[in-house]
Length: 80
Image (cartoon, rainbow, N blue to C red; front, side, top):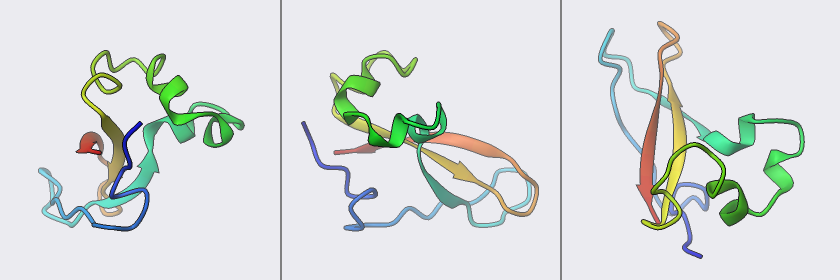
């Protein structure tokens, strides 16, 4: 099990929206949005069922980045 530098505040991500150029905001791990109990479940267990086939094996943490200006969202994989 790796440690996500974004989840733990060791680093930040700075990407701009492809549509409007606004800086994207990190909304957190994608798995936290699945249901009410997802944020409390083991991360590695959720990675096995999150729909991204290689995030567990590659030790990556999928994060949702959102544009507050135009509403576009995208998933980025942060290396643990």
